[in-house]
Length: 142
Image 1 (cartoon, one colour):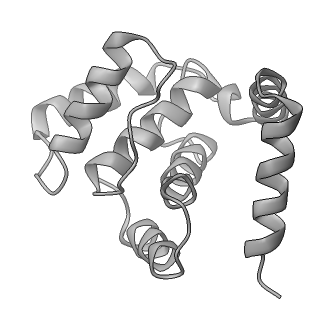
Image 2 (tube, one colour):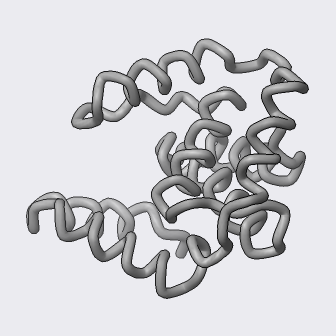
């Protein structure tokens, strides 16, 4: 279950007309913080991001399933979207937390996050990166 502040920050982003991915970013940030404070671990930075996006979908953020992901990932994203607003299963929640507690904490390190961001950016075209930068500049608070 996401923290109240995270949900509030995501709602604020929605009110300001920000993209669903920006709203979901709040949940990813929360997940990274959880790993850093030792609440649980993650096998990789990708896993930490995936957990955050899943939480965002379950909290009601209108985030579409990824287009270029595997069939299983897309189906899971759709299931998460359908679960929006419903209470999570206590037993499953506890089981996943128990499994994550056994994982390491280096997935949330600055180096790991930097490596992940660099790898993700490298996959995008120059035009796509430029478009994003221009959009960010246009929506930046003055």
